[in-house]
Length: 227
Ligand SMILES: [Zn+2]
Image (cartoon, rainbow, N blue to C red):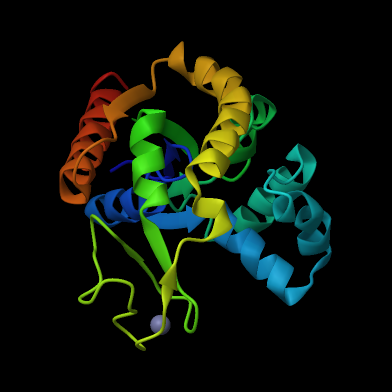
C-alpha cells in the first residue's frame, strides 16, 4: 500500500457506509475516520466547531461546508503526517469534493479511490423502517434482519420496542429526497474521474462488505500499476 492513501466512501442514510468503511479500513490496514462521529463528539463537548455545526445537524441537515472543512483539517492536523485512511462522511457536498484533493495533499495524503454504495430508495426504506428502538435502554434491532427473540420486547433489558418517528416510511422518503438533491452534484463530480467505483449496496451485509473490499483493493492495485 502506498503511503498516504485515502479512500472515500460515499453512501446515503441506511447504506451501511460506517460498517463498510470500517471493514475496508481493517482489510487494507488503514484507519477509519468518520467525520459524523467526530461532529457528535465536538457537539457533546461543546467546542466552538461543535456549536457551529449543531444547529444544522439538529435539523437533519449537514454542517456548513466551511465548518466541515475545518473539522477535517483539525482531524488531519492531529494525525501522523501521511498516515492513510478511509474517509467516511466527507465530502457531503460538491464544494467539499472540489476542495478535497488540495486539503489532503497539504497533509501528505493522496486520494486513490472513491467508492459509492448504490442502493435503491425502496431498499433503504425497507431497511430503516424496520428498525425498532427500545423505550428504556435505546438499543436498536430490526424486525426482519435482526429480530428480537420475543416480538416487541428488547433483548437487552426487556423494555418495549417501538418505531421512532424518524423511521416512519414517509419521513425516510422525505429525508432521502433532501439527501439526493445534495448528493447528485457530488456524485457527478467524482463519476467523471478515474478514481470512481460504484458497487451494488443491496443485499446481506457480509456480501456488500466483500464487494467493497474487493473494489477498493483492485482500484489501489490499478492505481499503483499505472503510477
Ligand atoms: Zn432495552
